[in-house]
Length: 401
Picture 1 (cartoon, rainbow, N blue to C red):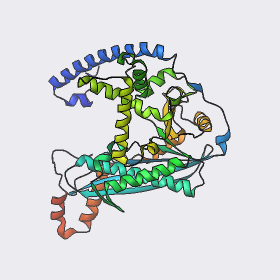
Picture 2 (cartoon, rainbow, N blue to C red):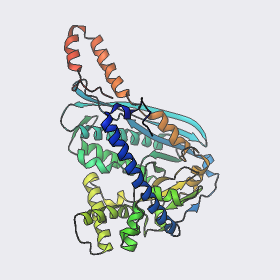
Picture 3 (cartoon, rainbow, N blue to C red):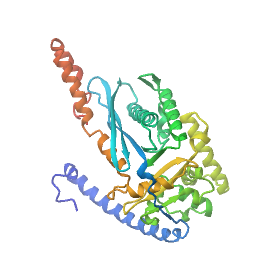
Picture 4 (cartoon, helix red, strand yellow):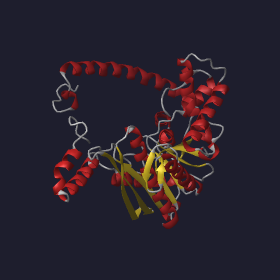
């Protein structure tokens, strides 16, 4: 279908590669079509078990002051200056009812030596951005007389990559090593969570806890849907409805363990390990989650997993997921989401607005480094040749983003 597109990325490949990729795309489209058919068949029976509930109506939110906090970092670091440079920022917007009444923005840069471990530098950059987001959320909680704070992202989503940089040198502010930065983010997050005034809103959910639960319940992988929870609930939840994991699981925290179960089952099958029972597999999933949390965050698992998750579908677009501390009354929040959402995305309007305001555009980091270079050359004319050589790209064939 793209063969006439002379300006697209496809046309930049040699003709033999273009034709090979066309054939691969056709093959994958057929495979995907069959997969969709299988999923649809399984969803018909699952619809009898998983049902949403109508979102309640309430005007309580009209009196609220709601803050929304988000951040962004450059997708890459620049190495042009003989060092690694990354940029990041965070902001908050505050609403009274539907009216925006306040805002705040903070920008930072991360500079480190060019050492091995480029991926670790990007992870540290993301953690510094997340730490800045938590600082702004704390500021709103303490200083802005807020009823609710919406964070863009889950409370502890950073733990998946945190263990890789615990011993890395940070050298920013008071953080000498990655473990100090991680501990600070963890403690700030727990404080926000314990306030019961903060929610983590997850736009790109990939968890497959429902499949893990189906596997546990039936002991048969063929009973699993083969899709993540957001896809399943997009098919089963009508607009104006919500769903809670705790309605089908034995406790709100169990989604952590069911989400791990299917992955463990697939690993055991591929490695030809015997699974004695679904209870044994569930216990293994629980141990793995416990170990992973302690390894990355070094903290009591019960505190980190004390979260309940919900899916909300306000209108036609797919549902979004959010989490709060277990025991938090969510019904007024649900009414807020229903009344004040963007019909194009299904997300609360404040989240879409802060995301638009805060996102660092592609190419900005390169321009930021070029600005540093220009200022240095302007103010050091006698050393101009040395500086130009110093700023030469490490790989002259590829320009940085």
